[in-house]
Amino acid sequence: MNKESIYGLTFDKLTAWLMERGHKKSRAAQVWEWLYRKRVTDFSEMTDVNKECVQVLSDHFVIQTINEHLKQQSADGTIKFLFKLKDGNLIETVLMRHKFGLSVCVTTQVGCNIGCSFCASGLIKKSRDLSSGEIVEQIMKVQQHLDKAGKDEAVSHVVVMGIGEPLDNFDNLVDFLLVIKDQKGLEIAARHITVSTSGLADKIYDFTDADLRVNLAISLHAPNDELRTRIMIINKAIPLAKLMPAIDYYLAKTNRRITLEYILLKDVNDQREHALELSELIGDRRPLVNVNLIPYNPVDEHSQYQRTDRETVSAFYDTLKKQGISCSVRLEHGTDIDAACGQLRSKQIKKDIANNLV
Image (tube, rainbow, N blue to C red; front, side):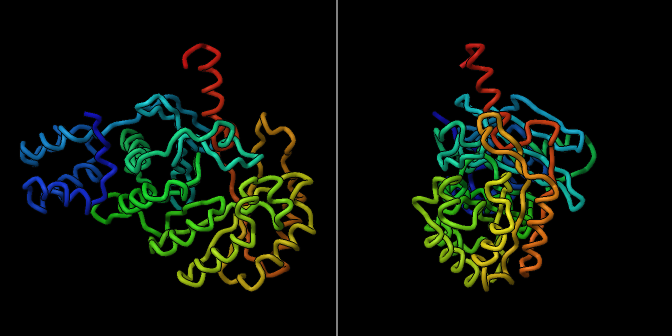
């Protein structure tokens, strides 16, 4: 039997699964506490759960499905984990330290098909979606790393911005969010969770209707269709004329702020006219929009792009502010390691191929 990850079950699904097999509803709460509060790595460690329940769980599920393959630690405390899945695929997960807490960036797919021309994540095309359990387990592995350090630290924030397009793995994303938000377990507040999408308009409507109450970020990176299509091929299929109404639907139905992510590429999208055009695109959405300006992490395979200098970043920021746009410049983490998302994975796969390991 190919056993599934127990982390893939939401609390309601775990409860229903156990009750179908004759166990009391309260048994799910016991199991849940062992998984997410005591963070056991084997069902046999659930000492106050009856043997029959432990046996049926171990017959159908596993707790550990991913293993640490490589780890890089930055001088600023950022840790990039390269995890190996059961099928041998590699994924990245990043722990970042902020003044407001500990944030983890998770991956949702093995590879990425979005094809952004500046991004390391898309260097290797998507081979499959991650299961909800594999996404949850990234959080658990990082938390177990913190537990071993003995500093009584906990993951407080989650960003779904790693390898892959989260909304292209919608059902597993939703279950992942329900698991990590559950107040009986990890209890990560919805307001501390952000999902980033390249702009899958149809899925933004679904995401809005799901009423998950987590934050949404849109990878915009350009203020017009011509430029956005040049650097993000997805814009050819989902132009701004389709994306912006989906954003409007989200804003109207949730009344929540949305973040527009904007990577600054030298002499490509970082000039004053681009900032003014971005302001015009945002228009009367200003009260519920924040623009997050992102310094570019150069990628060897995308040498046509360079990092915007600080003076130009500052001028872009100032132009937006003068137009009444709320904006910020993302703090950088892990600049002394493979900072770009997907970069460590890509390098390791190339190294394994060179050594005939894959």
